[in-house]
Length: 294
Image (cartoon, rainbow, N blue to C red; front, side):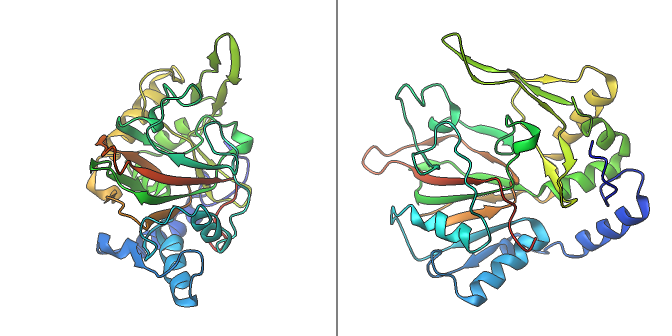
């Protein structure tokens, strides 16, 4: 747990109550509120930028519907991110040379066996949950060039709202998930070589600016949770809330030219079926930065 005294600190109840009230007062009444129609993500108008930023400030995520269609220009997510102060791309394994990942079904040796590059569903998670705590991701953009022939819908949840709902149930759940060894992702070893070292850290923490950071995966294999009753209870409560209406999960099927920009929100993907003549393709840009102005 961070030693910072922030509204997220369990011993700062007055500041937390003020932060919680402000957050809940801004919640949208309609899930359609998250969607913003824009022209070209590479060149936002002041009104388009302002509409997206409003949603990002309130809910840490926004869905854009643009006029770019199935234009495969990878500058679309990169230039969109730059307009929100996102510059430090995460050069994660599986990404292209420019650090922007082409998310599609791939069977080559570098991608085989990794679920994002299959047509299988992906459970709730934050991006980069296996990164070391000091290099957590702050934001990501997911831009659709071509959707699947069927399926492949996305779900998104604001981590701040999940934190509030979990703390409302029992602050002990937050304490357990802020433990420095709450969640361990074992090392990724391929052919006897360590591709990624073990990652140990909390689920919830405060970043250097005192804002909430979250690392989580709902996968059930190759993960180790702190072995104590408090962590088990907190994990059960968190998993229940992932499916609860009060956490306002946003369900969306991205069409050509549509995308998501967010402060590393929880998200999941449904399984899908591809059309070989028009295979699913999305671009994913992961950033070490948090969106400026949020």
